[in-house]
Image (cartoon, rainbow, N blue to C red; front, top):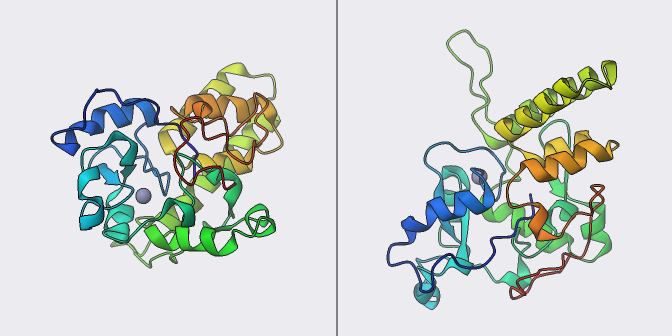
Amino acid sequence: MRPIRRGNAPRPNDYADYKDAKPDLVARLGPYCSFCERPVVTQLAVDHIQPKGLPAYAHLIGRWSNFLLACVNCNSTKKDKDVDPANALLPDRDNTFAAFQYLPDGTVEPSANATDNGLNAIADGTLRLTGLHKAALNTPDENGKQVALDRKSQRMEAWLAAEEAKRDLQNHPANHVLCDYIIKLAAKTGFFSVWMTVFADNPTMLSRLIDAFTGTSGSGCFAANGDVVSPAPNPDALPGGGKI
Ligand SMILES: [Zn+2]
């Protein structure tokens, strides 16, 4: 899960209609779901970290600091589940890249780092909050070929694209045009953590990936060479942040 910095509120007051925050959020965070990392061109929703459907958080309905972006699957799974920032790992205040590991088959699970920090249960709960632990769906097209509609299948597809790009780069290490192309492909394909995992041994590519995904570097969760900085510095001092 890509750590991000939302930054200062673009307006002095809360949004009268929270949906108006969407362009501001996309400008700060890029057009990606804040939870599953898929790129979303349409139907990207303003997510209320603490759900607007619970009376306790009704006053946060237009509050910038309570917003993330969510795809239709993450948003509908999260729905009105109560979120206590002290008991969830959130991309705007924790190093959520350090907290999870991504596998070639599309699985995302709590990382060894999370477990070592006693955060396994919280990390697992965070995956369940938006359904990121769910298995792939069996969705064949009319010719019987699998279609990657669900988040796990899409992570697997992103992994294959990243592996292919890595092989191409290994064959043409000095090709800057190829390098630029791979970065553009990653930004278009989404799934930041998958690309970061596949290119883990290439600091130049890590640093370029971090820059290509809007809102990532501001989190302070990565050094200039791509190394993970944990715990997150949580520059906006958001409640419960910096657990990892
Ligand atoms: Zn999502």
